Each structure stands twice: as structure tokens, then as C-alpha cells.
Length: 509
Image (cartoon, rainbow, N blue to C red; front, side, top):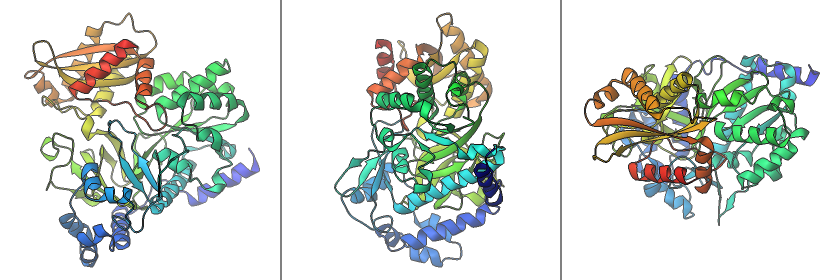
């Protein structure tokens, strides 16, 4: 082990931490007070009496009484559209140089303001993540290796008074100077917009890099690794990057990809989850051998929680008006919540769209369970993406299938009855598989693990159907939608009309 690597590791061991902030409740109160203090003279702060809230004996309670909850449409229609028109001091002091274009699973692009304070918060959270590496028992020389961050293009879209792009591209274009020596790909490749061209250049340059860590959305990282292996006629990625020891995942659940991902490796590596959204860096995995992440509770984001129950959510997946909203102090473990955030980018009581459970309140650890809009409840089945992933993980084990992508919807059959139809993206051969057996297995698993689903199957939900496709067809469809690479994700739950369009597209490839 090299001396420099050992010194870095020792410095991290001294300054890093494993448990997160020991007083999450106190830290969250301080974060909210700081946010309110900084934004009290903005148009939003004046309208909602931030100065009076700060004088209150219980600022959290007063904040929740006065400030309404928002989803993107409400935040944008009432406030953020002024920012795009060039106004300042709207929801955060000053203006901003960046807008993050949300590349999630909805068809309409969202413009999320990214302030300098938010970029500073993201950088600090990244440092916290590096500090946490001391907990994973990595050798000293790991800290001298390069990090390949597969994100969207850093060649941002230029507007009159700001730049636009995906959050990964904005973050990568603002990495600290001291980090650039470790960061790959280089600036020229990172700026490439075309996915195939970017991957081709990475494959060409791969022998010149000493990669110790990978970062990015699982599906696109795997495609990149497969391209490097194919380009150099390798058996596995460790033949060209022997020091690869860590993969930092984010954006979607990694478990569905793990089986096929590990076929590309010569030996096991460490997997670390992160939670970076267009609205901010929300959580990181601080400990090994857990599947949860710790909320970053002391760095520019105030978290709130709404119990994820049918009576709290409208038919568009948004939090209803006047529902009970909890601060972190009032939450309990193992309950599914809709997450709300207030941030240093001027998002206020903002529904980010994700659902989470708190797995360890003392350590402020959570697990992402799904999306409110990817919640299948057309006929009362109340299925979350987390439950869908669990069902397909069991399906893969029972039938020896590598299921990497899926889309599901409640649609009408020929008799105008509702059915659940699943489109599964398979890596490898599946011609021998009986689709009816797969449908029965999914149905049985969900009946056992979701009582609402079981009831729905005795009433309006009449059948389950499955169609199988090569996963490559899913990626070709994504490419046609210009969602290939970067932070792009394939949707999990679609409305009937959109679902049928996707199914027809997959059948034509």
C-alpha cells in the first residue's frame, strides 16, 4: 500500500463518522431555522411570514401551519416560472445560474432551480460520502485510484441568463479542482451528449485509466461495462480495471440488476447506495452490510413525512391538502411515508415524489420504497414499486431469469374487465419460459404479501398477464424517447394509453 493512500485513509478515519449526526432532531430544527432566515426577504418568505415563524417558540409547527405543501406543478405555476423569466428573490435569495431538467419517468420535462447554495450543499454531501468510506474497510491504495462517474452531459444548454441540464451533468461541471485528478471520464468525453458516442470513447480510453470506483444508474453503468468488455474482448471488467472495488449506485433500486451485473466481475466488489435527486443530495449509505441510507440531516435540506395511505394521496399521486405532515422527530420506523423537502434551492414543503420507510430512526436511515406516481391502485391493489421489485426478484430466483426492467399497468381486457399486465425485460434466453406460469407466480406472491391486492383479486382485478421482451428492446425504446444514459430511468407504472404505446413499440423492434 502506498504512503499517500494510507495518509488519506488515516485522515478519513480521524475525521469521518459512521453513525451520522447523533442528534438528528436538533440538526433538522437548525436546518429549518437557517433556511427560513436566509429566505425571509424573498417573495415567498414575505408571503408566508418567515420572520414571524422564526419568532415562534415552535418554528417547525408554525412553519407547517402557515406554509402549504407543494408538488412540482404548484411550485412552478405559482413561483418558479418567474425564475425562468429572469426574476430574482422569488423563493431563494438572488437568482441562479442553473436549472436541472428532471429526467425521471414522466414525459414532461421539469425545470428545477439549482442555486449556488444547493451546489455547495451537494459538494459537502459528497465529502460526507467520502468520509464514510472509512467504514467499508478499503485498502489504503484505493484512495489513490480514479472514480468513473457515468452521468449526463456536462455540455449544458445555454439560455439567456442560466444553463440547463440534468443534475448529474450540472454537478460534474462543478466538481472541485482538487477532485479533477481523480475524476473520469475527462472533460471532453463528459461533455458528449450522444450516449453511444460517449460509451465508445470510454471504451477506447479504458486501458489508460486505473478505476477504483464506479458511479451511476445501474442500467447505464452495466451497458457501459458491457461495451468496454466487448471492445477489448475481455472476460470481465477486472481484466482492464483490476483495482475496481466499489460501485456507488443511485436513481433506482440496484437489486434487480445485481445478478447480471456480477457476471461482468472477476471478484466481488462493495456496493454503496446514494440518493441524489434533481432537488438535492438527500441520503448516503454510511455503513456496510445494510440496505439503508442515512438522510443528510444537517446540510441544507429539511425533511417532512406524510403517511403513504390512500386517503392522503390524490389520483395524480400528490399529497392532499390539509393532511397530517410529520417532522422527523414524530416519525416511526417501518412505516411508509411520502417525502417532502424544503431546500437551499427554494423548494418549500415540496413533494419530491418518492416514498420511503425509516429503517433506523436513531441513525436517520431510510430505504426508498417507490414513487407516488408509480403506485398501482386503479382497482384498490395498492401496489408499491418496492413490492413489485420484491415479486420480480423472487420470480427471477424461481425461474432462473435475469429480469432487468419492467413496466406494469392496470388495463382493460376484451371483456372490459381490469387486469394487471406486466412487460418484463429479460437478459438472456427466455423462449422456454411459460408466461402463464410467470403470471401465476407474480399473482401468488403479491396475494401473500399485500392484503389489499388479495382483496382486489376477488373483486375488480380479474387477471394477470405477462409479456416477455429482450431487455435490449427496452433500451432501444428509451433511446427513441431520448432517455438513454445519464440519470434517465425507465418508467415502472404507466396509465393504460401510455402502457399500450410502449407495448406496441417493444413489439415492433
